[in-house]
Image (cartoon, helix red, strand yellow):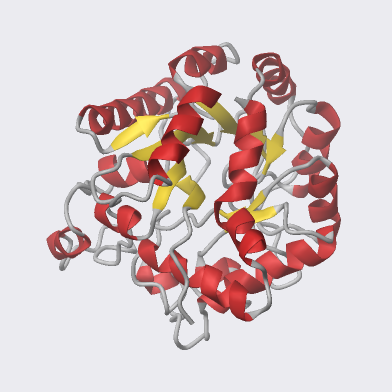
Length: 360
């Protein structure tokens, strides 16, 4: 069954983290990136990368939500991170400098307004070869710990930041995330107020259940979930319950489905389980997409937020995905399940595109 490749928008890629902390030159081929990591053991996914600019273009992933990320860790916090908010801020500024360097090299282009968005989408839909087109990106931050003060979010807005996820894993300076509990603290509430004033996107990914509901109570602006799966398939607080999904649908949110295997199949053991052994395939992404569509009664709220190479690679993602270009298999799976061409285009890129058009 042949299908033309859909334009894909992926709403969560940690590109600058890979470039700076993993020291990956995304301009190189994927074979070269992984070859350079042969024998390395400092990261769990060494030699298993799925992303390069070449592979993004092969997969027609022409627009992404690209992150900054730097966690502050208090002395009693065992998670990896930075030992002061100022150091975390400096790390995010280094990540910003990498994005700017890639723009200067013609690899990427930051999108901060609607005119730029429309021009970029038109470029990717002009029917010409994709192999030299820049990857468009909307800048997001995963975890707000690096904002030294609430006013730093306005500084970040001025350099192009448009979406903020207040929490990541564990306790945070503004909100607590995955595997923790508790509502937003006063600084977190002030952060949301400042974001509201700026018209920014609230990313509820990684908020624990208490903070999720508190944030929806407080925040009046646009809300999305860049990379979450459904709790009905993997019963863990990192995923969304059906009640949470319904609340997001009521807010006209879009939810990006992720490709980290532990979020896709129950019982995954990091470093032990294998995609083949756990029968983890791209069909499971389609299951999550379909579940959200069934709850909504339409296709307008499900999309892609792969999180590929977010500290995992082919050792911990679907066995039928070897590079990010293989996300193109998902539209075919949906077609076989009876989704129309229009529905598939909405899930591949249209839902994110319509959301971002309204916000910018």
